Length: 445
Image (tube, rainbow, N blue to C red; front, side, top):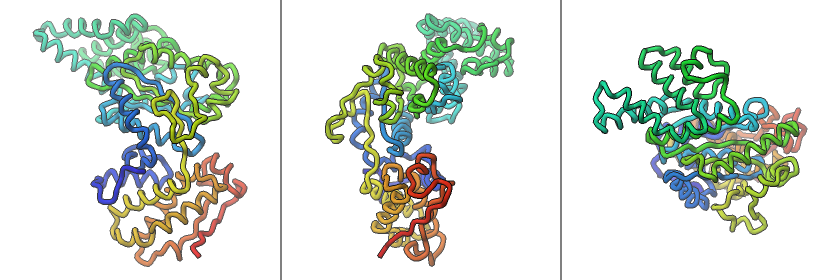
């Protein structure tokens, strides 16, 4: 069930953001707890894991589900819970061209580009680093350093806090020093360039690399050290940890075999380093389809990785263990889809011009009929229907009821599903060829 109930206080801005995203057919960036149907059974275990990360451990979690089962929604919902607990959050879409998993330097770069906190949107890298240096100054002053002694005291604290990181990635501490030095002398261009290098950006000017005490660009192995450094900076600047999502790892199945093998080994390395305690403060999540976890072109291709991710899913899904390394998302049934539709209807009505008209004309029976019709337009596959169903419900039905006094969806609305508004997966499952439009009548007789 969703955590939203009619009458629950929800800000107008939050409601607007959620409905606006659904109207576009997108997963909302915020307010996902309002839509979290059926996820309550995971809450206690996941919250316990977040608390463990706050205490200094690290967690790895693999999420599995078919297309349309809500993997992206789940990871963002959990990320939102993490952010409320003062975690920094980053979501990365694994991609052969943009973010190949076998190049961890690229993964790290995307992480810093998409890093966000409760106070700062992406990229929050600079505010986090500035907050860290401010914390060092405060600690130095609290220890009795005078204004004249402050620079040396901060340098000493920097060396102490990054001592473990420097064993693996001395360039991280050097770049942090270079960034602070550039700021101290008022050289903003150099400070920005050094910060870009700290964020893993390639092709930084040679002068900035010299200021950072570094040579060349960040490489695959250096990226792990820089991740360790970033976690230290986050912790010391007051954050509980980092919640990191690697989404759509099933795309590895479609890359060249050599790149796939390197990517699977990089994933195995990340898991091992996480479990070995190298990354305290990290909650790492990957998402993928069952075919990725079970098929010959995915996890099973690398036996050590398959062993690490092995989870028993032969029992009734009701008894799945939420503490296991893998979580299975059951996807939507027609009943849960209708329940979600009712939740959105009530959320919409709470801010509508005429709430009574919304609940009367889009009653439970109508919501159920619309859910059946949308899933029917997608070949009867309810599991991939939520995105399109909510888009139609909000944009085609509820908006019209709210704006037009004489609009009645039972008399004036006919569901149309055009190929242009479907994702590739939805097109493949639609009853009609992708190049034509589907006109599906709602039958309320």
